Length: 144
Image 1 (tube, rainbow, N blue to C red):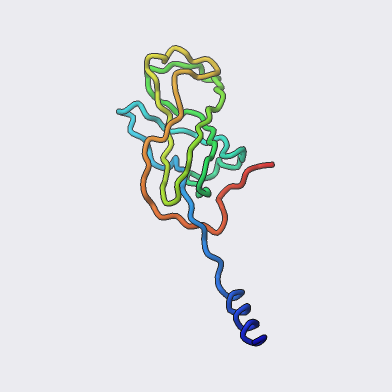
Image 2 (cartoon, helix red, strand yellow; image 1 turned 135 degrees about the vertical axis):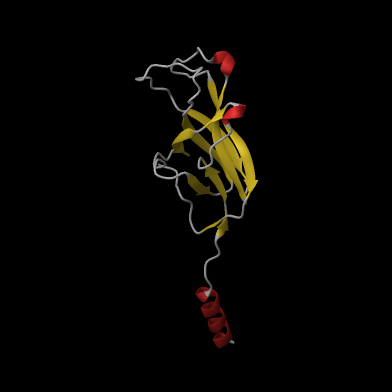
């Protein structure tokens, strides 16, 4: 009996770890400007600021806070070259097996409101796409 238990424990220990399901946050695809949607630059995901080097992030299912800056190139929007805006946050409830494509929605009626709060835009998910996702560990981890 002891030998069977020992053999069973050895077999279980030899099994590879299962990859967890995940979702993705993406700024890779260019949003449709004809719908007043523009690219964004990621600032932080769940408090982690190490997001500047990639365009797609695998995250665990659940709520995530994504902070971003707009990259609106519409000629109707005028701001000084030295202009620095505050990042805006969007909370996304990520479902496993989906990619969430992020963008900045330009609010034309507020195009003159270019103060630090940036009321002329809002962060949005412009497309949700079913896409299998597995990960051994998240691409980012919350900062302490």
